[in-house]
Image (cartoon, rainbow, N blue to C red; front, side, top):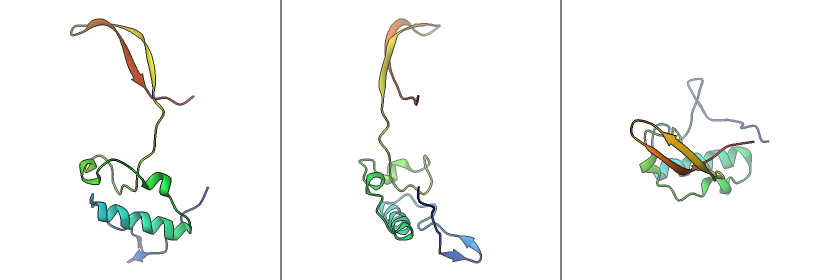
Length: 95
């Protein structure tokens, strides 16, 4: 695992490029910043089908996304005030 060596500072504080911005341009600036600092690419994380602007308010300083394995659980019997049926549901877990 690489340790990020942040070189850029402003008034003694660490700075993330495009901080607080959810544009694709800001995301690309952060990717370049990390890749330059690590002297390697992060293409497996940086490549994504999500639109940066659509994630505003959901993640800060986004650089990419990861694939998460999803399985199917069930049948699950749900009994409640608003639902009473047997269903199958997607689940993502780690074991």
